[in-house]
Length: 381
Image (cartoon, rainbow, N blue to C red):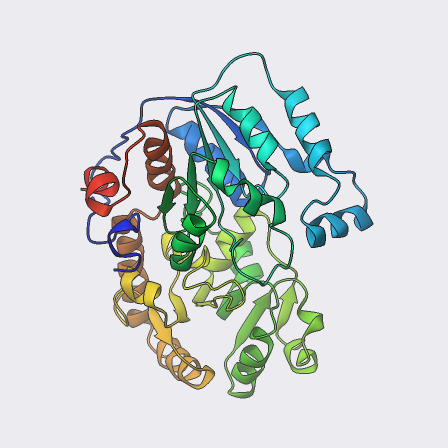
């Protein structure tokens, strides 16, 4: 298993999907600092479904709505904005206390604000699905890195981040997988109009990245019937080839995203080498929605799903094209792999309610270690 004894949840310790969900943490009042959309909002809703009372403050709303300022904030890591965000967050706090504080991402939350948050709540948690210790994003995570020693719990989703967080002074590190959402990524009833809009043979939904352009262009040259959705693909040097299969920008509407996956015969899963990914949210969302995941062969993907039984993996565009051709010619095989992949996803526990329950429990209970037998064992058996 990746992450040795500290990776959570672990596919070998799990309930069957027919068993009732086991919630370990009693309801808490939680102050949530994070974006009020996307996967951050999915986590908020999961916490609410678990019975927690959430008070949301979106610190991104305190940054002036100016394109130049936003670019500056991202590239400089909130230079000259730390005091503004801190002041506005503190002004937005209710008088009541909280059992815990959860900071999602936290690129504009500095050490002083983390210390302030300790005065209004119990444990202060940081949950970050990006790679703040890597080099891809330049100075974006400058404030986050300064704040790491002041959090009571730092949650990471990449193996190298464990040692990197500890080297930065993290008091306690909880490694987890990314996750699908039980509601946002639940299967939809599809209409004829849905099929007419979203049906495809092979689909990839994702943003352009430098290594993805050559890969997608090669698939097209190899004759893979591809439908591509995502932003910034016009930046690709291969745009002249790729534009033929580009169907539109990123799909941010939850229903449309779910339907696009459900209507695809095969869904590609590309990881970001710059972000040191070995799995992505699509690694969980696609199987949870009942789609067939055809992803890069990585250590994590191979630990999560049995190859050619629960998902399909490849190392090169040639291998990907060969497997896509095989699958497109075998409806029954596609259906069997997709169904087994969904079952495995549920068994693995890589869903928001299971993951968020473990995160809150790890912080609130103050357990001294994070291990599959300690934190995950009781929860996932």
